[in-house]
Length: 265
Image 1 (tube, rainbow, N blue to C red):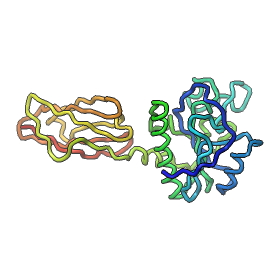
Image 2 (image 1 turned 60 degrees about the vertical axis):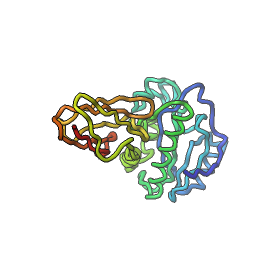
Image 3 (image 1 turned 45 degrees about the horizontal axis):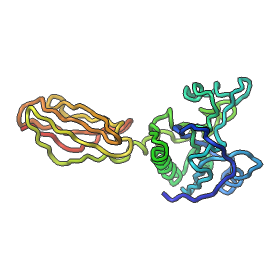
Image 4 (image 1 turned 90 degrees about the vertical axis):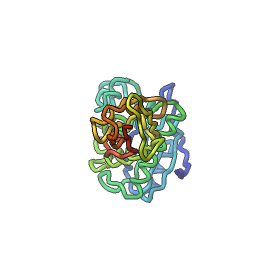
């Protein structure tokens, strides 16, 4: 994706922590220029890794290997930003500044967290880019779920209760990420002999999180195997010669997609 570099001086070290949570925000103002000016002003001591404008333009302010000053928590129990007030168990359990292990995205505000069509598409692409880059840089896979793709209000519910807003499209972002195409190493009809099996390989973003199922349960049994970035599945015949069934993959929260057919011979 095309990312416009707009460096901010407001960042720190991750102190050895690896990022595994993406935190979504909305800006206080309604323009990208205003947000960039604020988040790049050293006197404001605030930043974000990215800003997504209403027209879909994405700006990067802080490198992913650095801690942007966006989601900070405190270890002082009387502080309103105390980590113990977070709605997220991960934040409460880690007991360190959440900036150390989070990546932040600011969305130029429309109203209540609603995103424009262009903004939503760009945000989905940006989430996908972040997930791929974190895996490349750190070997960490950020799960596509609401425990790891969150809002600022879940980090700091007292100081930021309305960020990114009640209408922020978390589910649409998750659906967009989960609907990345999963491909199979085969198509058409695979013929499998009784007493044998066929090992199918499925690839794509988060392939190891998919479920592999048969359309007809008494024709084959499926033994799933995770290996590296791919999902393998042994298709084992249990029916009689001539029986046939479709083999489907389902991403978390998605709909089954037929990949190929299996026939017993």
